[in-house]
Image 1: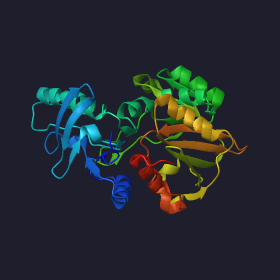
Image 2: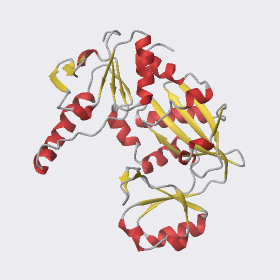
Image 3: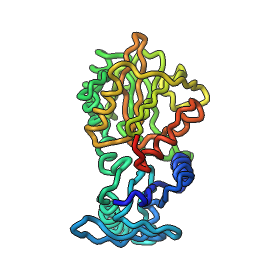
Image 4: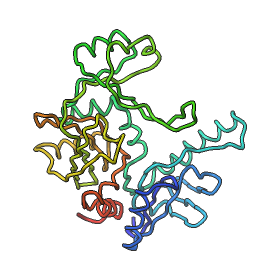
Length: 317
């Protein structure tokens, strides 16, 4: 594959992180084709054939066309979902599945392409129980954790490991009665709050880490950027105004464990969250395979945008 091929960036229209990376690539003269798979088929079209050399054909937007056989890398960020509002429900469901397995299958099968990250591998890594199990196998320490739909088991876990926090297993946005978008918060939970509602679905409970700070560790290819976050908050993502950032060196053994974790899922990028205990232990909380990271660069001076552009350009390091 020629190194002159484009970088394909798959994301929604409002993505400041992608904007920064695309601007850096443009400054280097690297061709970029940006698209939102949710624009298919209204303003995005695909023509693909299966040949002895793999997928060949084109993806076309109103302003760009990508030769599928020459895509050097695909940066899979946060595309919007497929939507067919003009169709009846049963027709829309059919069209959505055809788009997902058709266009989605093409995007997942580009020959010689570096995926950052591959959409199927992102899907695998987004399952929190899988991530926690992989973290243990990679050598991280995790807080005692329980996934359950049984109230008695939840109460016993809280009694044995309290204080305990409740964490959603996934974080889809939903609207409250006032029509405001929100998510389920991470918070401490007591045995008195556990009732029959727990039987309604699966829940994740974890022992609360007695922490002095948090850490966000961003892995971009071979580069590891470690930032200590001081806030005094249970979940630092609830109030960015209270955060202070300090670039730090990772503790011994952490870097190799990070790469073991990513290799387990076939990832080349990951945004890891840790809680730093009073005794200096780094407790693994989660890894987001498509997490945010660019806001840290102006706060710390770490050259993360350039590192991501190097990776997508496939520039030797």
